Length: 280
Ligand SMILES: Nc1ncnc2c1ncn2[C@@H]1O[C@H](COP(=O)(O)OP(=O)(O)O)[C@@H](O)[C@H]1O
Ligand SMILES: [Mg+2]
Image 1 (spheres, rainbow, N blue to C red):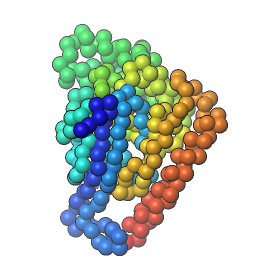
Image 2: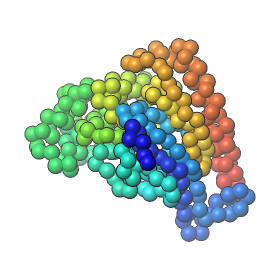
Image 3: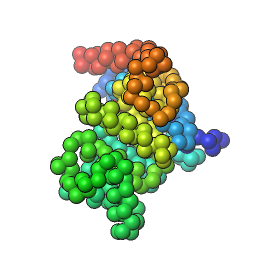
């Protein structure tokens, strides 16, 4: 039976990709035409929780989000949302990617409104809701700009506003701030938390930055190198609302040390695997 208090459950998730014809990978010293990306992923995420996922590059974080989003299927095991197995994209799930993924031919307002249009919301309400979510991110006055007329940080604000405007039960974010400069990133983290504290949707946020993972999260899940699984879960007991200053405090330092301790071996292993694959 699925725990009803969990919004998202991942149970023994395994994902194997078949390589392209003729391609092989070295697995345990032997050539294989398959790659196991995830193996034995178990994770329960509570309703309204902000969970961050850190892991070395190639550990299957994006693939795991795709499985939760219903964009790809687990080879075995499953992901469920509110007790229902995920097998297709779900209207209650919104996804924000690293690249802004806005329609370049639509204005900021039209980008947000479009997400509502496909959900059958009427024109006047679309406009009003889009305007409201843009204003939450301080984008008043920029509604009629096209993406190319906005900075990277503003484009990503529009992308998050578009995701939230659909009132999602689950918000999946895949390294959404990775392409931004450090200052913009800090500001967006604070803005995201401020808005999340009002709406308390369940968030799964992937990052490879430990400080970002700790600053945002209720819990940080650390993934192993490929095949990825959850190695350790760190409960972050820092008070909310959070101020950027907490990053200099002793508690934050202790969390940083613990997270890095869990991650270090995995990053080294991922780098060794990468070097071996290159020399094969
Ligand atoms: N469609 C696919 N076919 C084959 N391999 C894939 C496919 N998608 C992802 N992979 C592989 O799965 C591994 C994990 O990818 P990914 O989830 O993007 O890692 P992460 O997001 O943790 O950096 C990588 O080695 C990647 O090459
Ligand atoms: Mg990724």
